[in-house]
Amino acid sequence: MVVARHLVRGYLILGLIISIVHALSLLPGCFTNDAHPRACVPGGVVALQSEWSLLDATEAGVAVMVVARLLVRGYLVLGLMILIVHHQSLLPGCFTNDAHPRACVPGGVVALQPERSLFDASKVRAVSLGGWLVIEKWMKTSLFDGIPDGDLLDGAQISLQSISRGTYLSAERGGGDRMVVNRTAISTWETFKVWRVSAGVYQLRVFNKMFVSAMNGGGGAVLASAASPAQWESFKIHRNPSQSSMVHIQAYNGMYLQARDRNLLTADLKDVPGWNKNDATFIMVVNTPLGGEYQLANGWGAEAAVNVFQKHRESFVQESDFRFLASKGINAVRIPVGYWIASDPNPPAPYVSGSLQALDNGFQWANNHGIKIIIDLHAAPGSQNGQEHSSSRDGIAEWAVQVGIDYIGESIKTIDFLASRYGNNQALLGIELLNEPGAAVVPLDVLKDYYARGYSTVRKYTSSAYVIMCQRIGGDFTELANVLPADKVVLDVHFYNLFNHELFDKKTPEWNIDFVYNDRLSLVKRLNTAGNALIFVGEWTNEWMVENASQSDYLRFGAAQLQVFGQATFGWAYWSYQHQLYRWSFKQSVQQGYLNAPTSGW
Image (cartoon, rainbow, N blue to C red; front, side):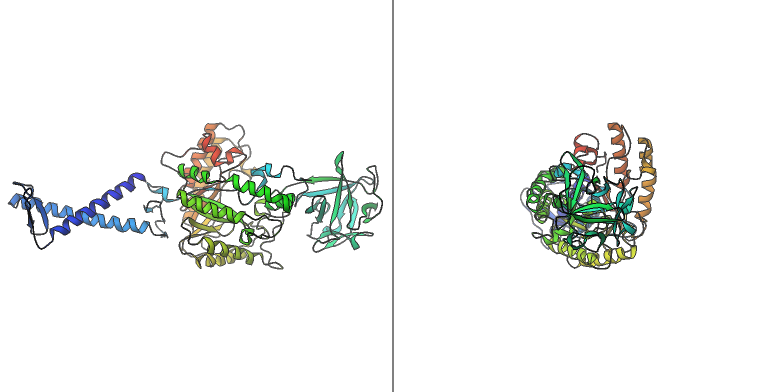
């Protein structure tokens, strides 16, 4: 690309110089000086003649002059054509057509790319800044170190077994009925999801999404019939100091839950129970599957969380990281954000202010180092997939539920906020309307309507930014290819040789590499021609399920992915820049020699 850029500039300068000389030769008068008499030649070619010259007006000179005139005009036309193309590539927007997707390159070179070419560097070569403004515990577990009762975070799943009876607490019928203590095994009705009120105080959500409630705050029956939690649904969990799995549960009025009757759990024990075998002592088994932004903020609590988040945001990504990425040929970053950014500096509880200032900093650093930004709505209100990276409170995805809170409308407000704030910023490359909606919880028609609304919202503020849709995880890759008009629209697909144990477990390096060159390549090519949208491999990583892979294996696997994903019409983005698992980290993989730029560039 650098060589091509210099050729463009050379022809441009040559064309302009010759055009000036040509213009001078058309002046009505001719002139001379003592050293170099100058004469006009019919047709406008100027000859510098001391005595005999190449352009002497002899018969031979005239012939040469004709050739020279044609060369002049040729260079002039070529220079002007390149000037037009060069100017067009500097326009803020890029465009596509069916045969040749077109994209802008820093420096002004336009590439017409049916597949890989000299100018493929015009495609997006991005790295996601995951774990910066939307927390994921598995990327940086140290953020959670020291949280009191750190296993009982929001979304933790618990079961409770009576010491005296040996049976488990159960929400009869999955909820909407009484709580009983008569089950001999654990299933969905015997599993409760934690909503953390504060350290030691919790609410318990049952299978049908209702909450456990001590009627009248305690003194009688315990039911699983509250539609939303309040004081009667809040319980203190006291852990045995010498055996944390042994617990007492205290209702709002101070009475303790007990299993006197196997067919009805009650909250009517007034005295503090001991840790011996009694009806008020339970064995609690905890599974903590979620560790996202919600869990971190609510786990630390309002006061302590401020310091935790401030230190993290200031250290996890800095301007030096943008400088590093630019030096490695990366031309864009994909920045995941949560919906609460639109309410900063007063985000809804338990979220902590400061993410908006961090994103502002990111735009400043991007402008300083010639990098573009894709803003990615990674965590939508209500959660679009029930995962920690969408900041689900308890693993339930309610974003697409069209009753009660209008989560989709709130998401559009977030897109409106981001587009209005950054739409005219020269570092903005695109806005991704939603990350990884789950096919099992987001109906296709609902998502299509949302993407149409999001597209219109972005276009109110900018015609140059790309509007990016993400595939439904578990859906057909091509189902969204023609949802929006061919107006700088992108479809984001995510490719990992992970997560699907049936497909990827216990496979060799060669099998995985062949899978990329065959299955992935075939899919990329099919997607490239599937519809209006440009194709963006918006998440991939250089990690797999291969055990004991060598550094050479990683290098070959990375090279295969770069070559194949580089054929996507929009480009790719690596997940992620920083990660405690080094092969997931672009920075560590590059620095340690596990991921190299191909000889033709990224």
